[in-house]
Amino acid sequence: MTVQDPQLFIEAFRAAFTDAEFAALLKERDFSIQFVVTGETHTAFLLDSDGVHDGAPHPAGLRLEVRPDALHLILLGRLPVTRAIVDRGLVVKGPVARVRQLADFFPAMGRAYAQLALAPASA
Image (cartoon, rainbow, N blue to C red; front, side, top):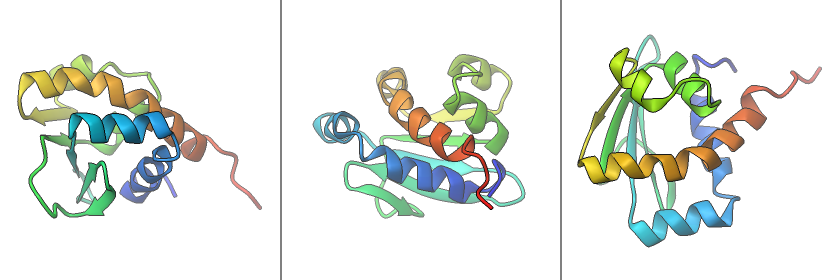
């Protein structure tokens, strides 16, 4: 799996739910994010307090349209969200208050992603 494969993001976000604080924060704030990963392998999935779902089973609090390379760098902490927005690698749709809360969720998602994305390939 490569960073261009949206399945890697889906697996990482599912893994983030092992962080009890992350899951509790999603539930407490009733936070949901629809990710639309653009590019060759365009895909959409929803992250909410119940987990990660294909498509969009219900409306999300935020919609993020993002290039896979930009999401990869954001999750690894190498690209600030504001820079990604300015560079048009990330388009955010939703209330500003919700956008500001993204910073509370990216660390747990980033840790889970880094474990998968940066893990040495097993033989």
